[in-house]
Structure formats: C-alpha cells, structure tokens
Length: 224
Ligand code: IYR
Image 1 (cartoon, rainbow, N blue to C red):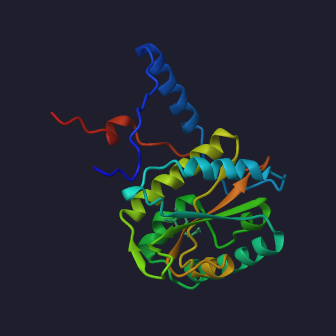
Image 2 (cartoon, rainbow, N blue to C red; image 1 turned 90 degrees about the vertical axis):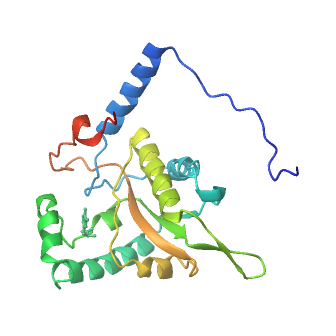
C-alpha cells in the first residue's frame, strides 16, 4: 500500500510510578495557579515567547491532521487600539444596549466584567486565533475540514498552557460578534475569529476573583 506519510517508531517517555505521579502533581499545581487576567502590565514581552506559544498550540491533535488554526499576532499599538475600540463598541451593545439576556447578565455578574476592555491596548501583544472552517485548494475549490471546533479548542488550551509556563498571562476574550477581527487582521472568509487573546505580564495591581474550582468528585465520574 502507498503511504502518504512514512510510519516511524514512536517512543513515549516512561517513568517509574512515583515519578509519574510527582510529575502529574507538579503540572497540575502549576496549572492550578493560572488565572484569566484582565489587568496587564505594558512591559514588553519578547515576540519569541508568543511564537513559542503558537508553536505549542500547533502541536494539538486535529481532525484528519488538518491543523485548522491560524494565529494572528498584533503588536502595533495603533492596531491594538483599533481592536480595542471595535471590541468595546460591540461590548457596549452587550452590556449597555441590552444584547446580553438577563440570564446571561446574571451568570456574569460575579465576575464584575464591563464593556471597558482597556487591556486590549495595554497588553503588548494581541493574538487572534482563527478557525479554518474549510480549506481552500490552489484551484480555489473547497476542502472539507473535520472537527474544527474540537481541534481549535485543544490548540487554544495548549496556547494558554504554554503562556502560563513562561510566566505570561492571557484571557480568552470573545467580544461577540467578532467579525471586525477578520477585517482588521485581513483574514479570508473561510477563517472564523475564534478567540482574542491579550498576552503580557499580569499588572502589579492585577486582581482576580477568588474563585474555587470544582473538586475532582464533581468532575470525575467513576463508571462501575
Ligand atoms: N464577551 C463579554 C461578556 C463575557 C461573557 C462571558 I460567558 C464571560 O465569561 C466573560 C465575559 C466580555 O468579554 O465582557
């Protein structure tokens, strides 16, 4: 049989049990310190850190290995301002214009979020993840992509994890509707804005709600 890819041996690291558990615990404890941040420092962050996080994201599994993600990286202050202004215009309609349902407002109230999105201008980098709804072949025809949401969601999770590992903060911002991001980033119609990430150091004065996470007993189901 003809192979598209050669099949090569795969050797996964294997650790003694105690080490496995120690490694898992350490990784969990690090991730458990991650918080979504809305207050950023304007201190510069090397572009290489953003590139490494995008490379980490790109290791995600994807449907039929189609890798249906694109990450637009924006450092230019004028473009960040445009994005802030456009995001706030949408968010004002959400918060002040009644576009959020009362039920949604109630769910959000504990987080005390508002239409002020100044972090979009303060954080030194904005990264917009786009999901490729379908591929476009060189002759212009469409190629179906599979499991786009699952694939891009996993990639974004790895992106967030990589940033946290480097001591950087982010926030999964979805200033719904996000069509303005396609326009500003000049992305084609087969790419849908998925998540807007401000990336930077947390501000010295950053505060986060003192949330708790669901205990394992609420999350893990032991199937007999
Ligand atoms: N996109 C809005 C509203 C918002 C919605 C959810 I769900 C959140 O968890 C947080 C905010 C905003 O960014 O303010």
